[in-house]
Structures are given as structure tokens and as C-alpha cells.
Length: 200
Image: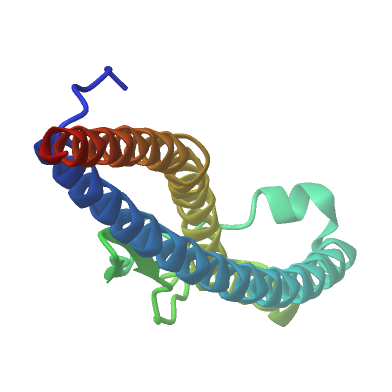
């Protein structure tokens, strides 16, 4: 901070600046606490979504094994593919202190009907359905993961700003304000002594 002339006006300006800094630090402190709580909540939700996805993935692997046993590896590779395309994934967002957080999409997705197959089987269709079930689960997990990354980035930025106010700007302002007040008190005492001596 630049050196200030020790005057009453400078002391009032520094006192006002100190009040602004304390208010800003209070806001940032509350913000980082809210971000930390939301981050822990999103992280727990991501872990739950990941566990759900892992369970569905294991079921899909089992279904693929059954399909391979029924058709062989080449038979599964040449099984008719479902037409591409499907339902659009609509993702809503919520606002947390200016930070957009994605709401996991709530939708059911299934593969489109495939062309007729000469050697169709329930095992192959079950495999198709099991992998199709992974799509909404993966979308939900991705939304949670994106929220976690955004919250971590915002928390680190807020933490840096709060520490700068708490450990740098606020101590400097307090020290300078105290120095100016001490100087003014000494000047007042000297003035009082001069007036008393002049009166004698």
C-alpha cells in the first residue's frame, strides 16, 4: 500500500477501507464454507453414481459373455447394429453464487429396434439392453464429475482471495491505520502541551 499523509481524513478513509475488507472477507469466508459443503455433497453423489454405473457395467459384461457363448465372438461382432440416434439429453443447470452446476439428466434410453436377424437370440438382445442401460448412468456420472471439478476450481480461487484479504490486505490496513492514529494522538498531545505552555 502506498504511504499516506497522516491526517484525520486519511484515518477515516483507512477505517472505511478496513470495514470494506472485513466485509469482503466475511463474504468470501461464507462462500468457501458453502462451496466446501456443496463439494462434499457432490462428491458423495458422484461416488454413488459411480458405484451404480460399475454394477450396471458388470451386468453388461456378464450379458456380453452370455451372448458370446451363444453366438461366438464373430457372431456378436456381426450381430445387426441398432440405428444411430436416439433421445436428446436435456441437461438443466442450477446456480450457486454465480457458479453453474449441472443437474444429472433424468431419462431412460434404449437402443432402437434393430433390423431382423437370422440368428436372433435373447442373449444378444439382453446384451444390447444392458449396454443401453449404461448411457443414462454415464450421463449422470459425467454431470456429477463436472460439478466436482468446477467446485474445486471455484473453491481454490475463493480460498486464495480470502487468504489475501485475511493475511495481507487486512493486516497492512490495520497497521497503517494504527500508525496514523498513533501519530495523530502524539500530535494532539504536543498541541495540548504547547497550548498549556502558551497559557502560562
